[in-house]
Length: 204
View 1 (cartoon, rainbow, N blue to C red):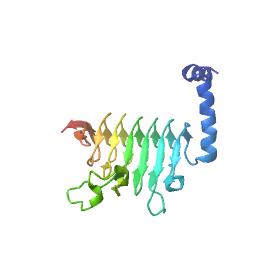
View 2: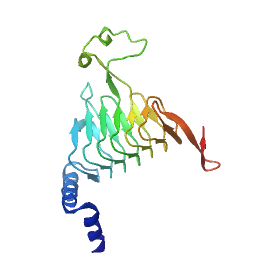
View 3: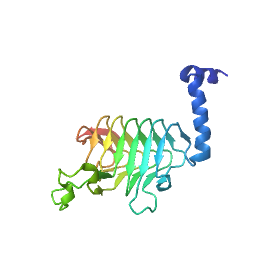
View 4: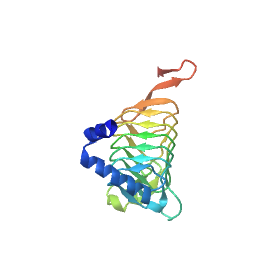
């Protein structure tokens, strides 16, 4: 009884009602997820794999638009916790490993309008071309097991974030982050690495 009264005090009656309704909707429509706090915007559901026992906060947007209309292009691992207002876009491959923790207001994408590499030969990448008419280009994104991504992070196309790494709040990740590292900044850079011999995080 005390626990229920504490929950009522912490969350409020109407929030608890919303949570109850969200739990039922999750179990009916979004298995194998454990809990999704609605509203949520899922586009291209057949191309998205939700992880076993994953949880998801309110206001998230997941979209998957593979050009060939085949297979899963957004794969979320087991026991992943995603907080509020996270936006993930995939056209080829975005994967999130098991036990990952994503804070709120994160953007993750494997795609952009145009290809701006120095060797790109496409005429349609001329900056005078209307942005939405430029051909899509993509580079796979992989967030490995047990990664923690902080508030307001952007993960750009072509990035791999190694297992057990941490990305600090507000970072923009444009290059790979090795396993067992802490990275911060815009663009994100590694500032610490875990030493398994001393069991300490050492400055780079």
